[in-house]
Image (cartoon, rainbow, N blue to C red; front, side, top):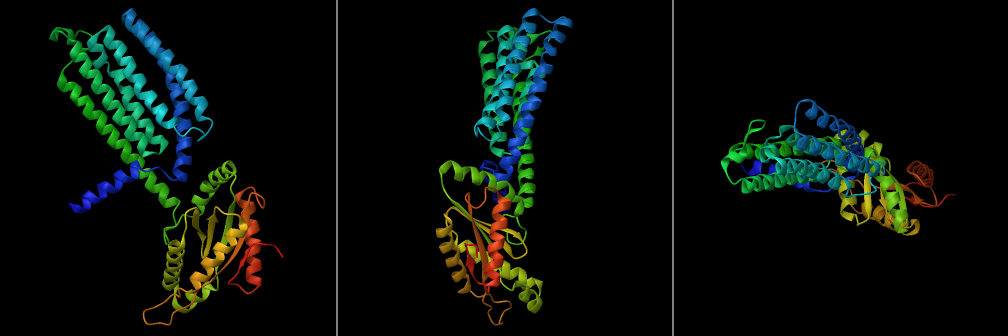
Length: 378
């Protein structure tokens, strides 16, 4: 029971947390997809009033449906326009989800104003809540799924209370077209909304875990190259906006192959975890450590290159003071690294250029005897 409770807390915490950069980027693409789908569905909604009129529906219901369809179409184009400007508006996924839910509520309220049973027993319109909740899965953000579900439950619950409050007699909740409105059936619909919210949230959670695995190094649990490719462009934008400096340090452990050859790959894996543990312990705010493969790492520092050189060199010396014990009882082995630094934006305006510049300086550090940090050419 303790394990189950801990697992539930882990899932809830993950769903309520702000997604990482990879998930935010995926979510931005999902928001654009939702906006396009919303525009297509909104156009199709224009056919419903026509079908209602041809099927012998009342003029009032047809006009309400037409008005609702036009309203949704206008806003669908607005959301589409905003979604094309990817991640510019952080509030957009919440606002557009709230619109999807609230538009459904407004149409149901309009139907209830015309005929009370229609507001609660119009299944086609009520399914708008389900669509609004399910579409949040494409945004890859658990907060949005839970927000949309809670909003749908809250708004529909208020609508149910309002309809029953307005009904002065049981006969007003009976309809030859929509059947009988009962508290039991409405409670069941609220439970269904909660169930769809939970299912959608679990889909989002599963997607987040799969993406997390793709952006996380399995051995060290550090971000990997995939994370770096998605994170750095946003970091560059932030640095430009704030007028700050950013330095990329390309780090390579010295003579690491000797550990694998002398003690085996298991010892090599433990040595990597030892290095990561030391670097994490020394980490400061505004620093990101990424494993890009083998014994190579990237350290991003939100500092000018001169200050970053002092910082990386201090880390190099600290690592040398924390030797690695390959086996119990074996002699400890000192570990060191060589590093090459490159500064953004004056030495490279994109990740590939910075990596090339940092790599050339890393090779220079190796030529100069290793266990060295180089921040200048030649």
